[in-house]
Picture 1: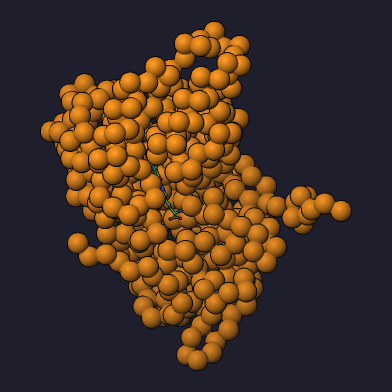
Picture 2: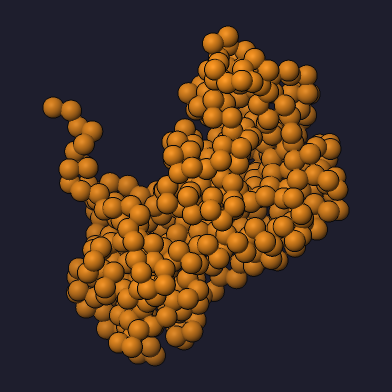
Length: 454
Ligand code: LLP
């Protein structure tokens, strides 16, 4: 299978998309419309009013679209494999409002750090619905997980087993000595299997290949299973597999099911996340239903009939509900190119620089490039040439002061946002039925100095 080379950020303006109005709106959250003045309305909220109220850059989330997507995932899995569950891979958008919303929609969560665990618990997530991940879990993280009585800890290496055994054996255990079950508590665990599968995705987000830092190859997984079966502190519930992210084909997922099926019969199989999102006009990811058709058909054929399936979507659950809103600071026409420089960039969207992810963009008050749109490179305001948001998009006569909307920014943007150039990270604004509410405020300059000591 073809493997995409690690791509550099798409720094040159080579290709243009010529979207129809419908095609353009098709990348925005369902329910996006245009106002009488032609401007985009996200969740019924006019982009101009949102910019005036919350400033730019801002990360807008269509709350209705996010809820609908969560329900679509849960319902589609439930009809195909009753009793199975969806856990949100919270690294894709770890803010308490998102944890709360997805808990309300009945989803569990996957956390991959003590920080994500703290956020999930603070948001009121039922600990029994929490799945703990990480290739380097510290004592502190595991102690917090066990004390919270999380539903599952995914064993990534033999040290995870040693650590958990020690923690659970400690007398004044870290494990809630006051808890009624102290002394008898057994932590349910899964073993993460590295299936030696390399899907067609960016090397940096491929996780199931032979040389992955994640999980245990089959012979070692067998050894871990044997150790865990003999443990009286840990209860082996099943297996986990996750092969990567932004996967646009169902076939590698099916192979991953076959790989775990060979390791024996268990009550739980967590089949990970990884379904790709549709970022550009050309992307054609499988639908949630097509993905789950393939996954559950493989599970029905290869896994025990009564086993509970868990899936952990991140990107494909949240990406499409998010829209980044920027303001144009300057337009430079040089060397036959038009650079549209906005007030955000790699500080709030690192996906382009890290993975060469392609995004589309539009002038938010005049959506669509039109037949006579200008071929532009939308760049950020940071001090790196790789700070590109969208290369090769047609924009309608972009001018300083215009608002630019970049769709499909709900996944791995908030979580990878940073303070490069001492940028203040943007607010997150939920929009629904024409009403907006900030759920994360913009950082202030004072925030930037908060941790500095005199
Ligand atoms: N489960 C596990 C154990 C994972 O490691 C991940 C993502 C997921 C589930 C969710 O995968 P998704 O459905 O989102 O593809 N920072 C990168 C993405 C890395 C994904 C890492 N693992 C990015 O910005 O593209």
